[in-house]
Image (cartoon, rainbow over all chains, first blue to last red; front, side, top):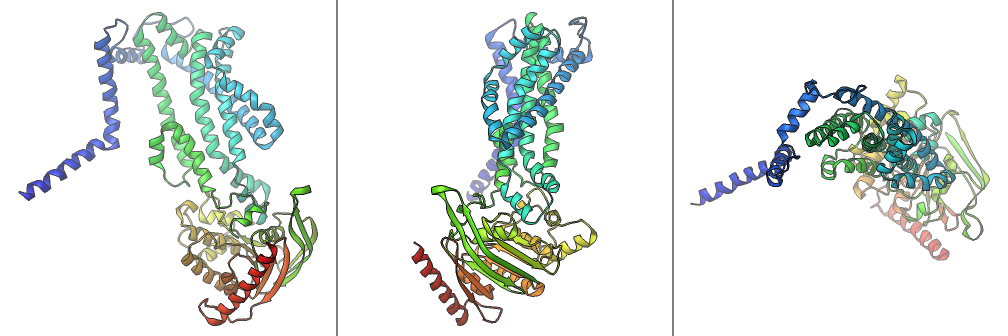
Length: 319
Length: 246
């Protein structure tokens, strides 16, 4: 009797462990999405709402250029539309990174510069991307200017804020150490200042890219006659939801691919000195990763001398 | 060998009503193969003195002269926390403070890492080491530039008692072998008595109050009577000053 009782729970726990594992959860997620999708499809009985097959077929036809849809004389297929958007995003992203880094550095280093720009940064941050899109469309017409400026204006506040915080969080105690050992300034810049800024810089890159995409699409919907955003609008005007969802999915796939194939390997290379923190990252998701990079930097510098050595307080802690 | 001469050293922070005197007209001379501890209550300017000697801070007035046999050598510094670059390996942390990265320099760094028992941890990052190991790297870093003068600012105060004791012993041996002039700031009178030939007692307000010679043979066991008595004497002095000041 007792032997039967002891084997039963063991089996159950193994099964439970398989069901409860993160891998199972990840594999289950797409199926759950599909299930919900079908549930909605059969419940709301809308002629507009597409099935997953419809979207998949649409995307396949777009990729293989067999749909026969001509979008416009200048940008007639997925690849051209995508290339246009990508060029706009890339230009806007680099301008936002460069200008944002310069302004962020200046704000971090000088209180006067910080006071000068502070309210402007907050104002740009508070402005809805839609307002940028409408305004820039009116101001510049349907060219490349409006979408590129939308990318810059959406992304730049995040770059500025992250770089500024990075400068404010530079490890003073490590600079003092370097000075005590009379290490030359250029070596200090390379080995202390730049590495300490890296987590904040990576956060800035991720934000500028992700937020820039969103600004771009909205600007292309309202202020452009080509590009991915415009194409989504095209399918919206045609009352074809599979086109809208299909193009949104192209976006998502590209964003995920860039994240996994470019940003993650770069970050892993730059931060291989950090203790492993996968659990924290998984629990907190993408924004968690951004935060924990900065957080871990702070932790790694938490050397027990939070108070600058120039201050008398530094000693009293241990007296 | 090195000579450190401090004349009328004065340091103040702040202005007006916020003015705080950290060091008040300090005069002292330290030289040769000695281990000098600087003890005193909190806020007596111990760390400030070390920071001025090492060039991290500038004095309000007065002069500091450090004469060394090896004119190229900068003083070494061991901080309260290890202060390692978290993004550089153990070996690269030592190379960071060197003047070049030649084979000879690497061999020297390796030698000092061996001395602190970390010869097999060259490629580890500081985050992968325990607090005691990190402080060992900090000590090896200070020794690796082969300074004539070594400044240490409460290097063991963050460590647990056992680790601190082991490191004190290792430090003593390294001091004996390398014959450096060591200035060691601590708030632990027992530690000061165990390690030093000479103890400088500072009082609140940054006054050098007493200059004690500890002429007991090394190695000193804190449990031995002579050492315990010496510690009690310094401690009494220490408490008197603290009472007067407050």
